[in-house]
Image (cartoon, rainbow, N blue to C red):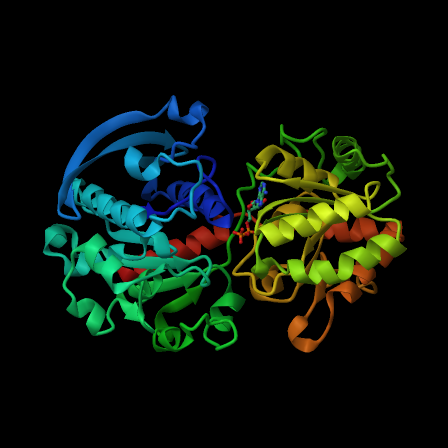
Length: 475
Ligand code: ADP
């Protein structure tokens, strides 16, 4: 099959979160299964030169956008059987950040059109166009409704929702100006939802299949509590809504070969993990002690991630117990301030690095004992999977993909790979965390929990096969 994917992020080129990890790994696995895969991404100026130096200009495309002739360059980079194409336009993508720009609506409208121009220029049209999250979700609508793309209209379409919270909501005027489609699409509720133009809603309505990134999140988003005001729409689409669990790139995240960590290790020589713990403590300026549990969190600092829960739990924990905590993250100012305040209050126990740092993230996954993930909702979550692969024990809240991947440790069977709270059932996070800490003091159990985590299969092979099956059924 020939599949064209489009997304706003893709690892290792441009990453803000889990979407990039998926785009870096799933296409490779589909290519391994024998399919022809093309991935289209904006060519942000923040992409490292080690990659852009290898990019090859494939073509320059001129097309009409917002009533003007616009040009974009298409750069090609082949890796692991996947053709990555980068859309270059300085006025839209020469920015220091991926998202959060005042003209995001226009930037991604431009990108949607650019992707369709690329699709249309393919000698052999794709069997499937697979888009991800709101940034590319208008593509299926344009593909079906704009006569410009009549020649590729037969392609089947799939939308994957990586996070329902982000929908790309804008005004009617923004829709009309950016897409130059007729007003009735808005007025009849085809692209609008509850008084706004809604990019994600448009995608959900138009695609042949909607997928999301874990079976539990798939069921959750059909409810009012998790449905982000789209649950009634999703209920209508229930037959075409599928949950496929994400994997991780087990080559990128491999403690036995990872060059970003201090000392490689695997399940047979787990004691080497300690070398990484000392390296974290040294970098963080914390006492180099093997016997004190080292807690970490690597995350976007957003409400979803349950930082409010840590605000409740961490000060008392740090006051009362011998633990260390290292945070790597960035996001909302109030949360950054909270963690910085925590470091000021507990300088020998807490280290906070505000920012995005891929290499430090790897070292932390390798060196920490416990990974904190008290998310209020979590479509899939990759951090808990990466943690487990590096023998770091997750303490997570039982929601979405966390529920599908973290299994509560059972001391009589020595089964399970982590610890769970359940906010819906009034099982608080500090109880789960203290349960975890009590096992840290019992080496025989602690070894078992770490090993269970490391021996889990988090590879993409099973999930990629599910996507392939889905495409096959469609065509
Ligand atoms: P989300 O996509 O909601 O942000 P996921 O758990 O699915 O959450 O994926 C987060 C990904 O981003 C993981 O690979 C994690 O290691 C990475 N990450 C998050 N914050 C940072 C950071 N500050 N520095 C480096 N990597 C980060």
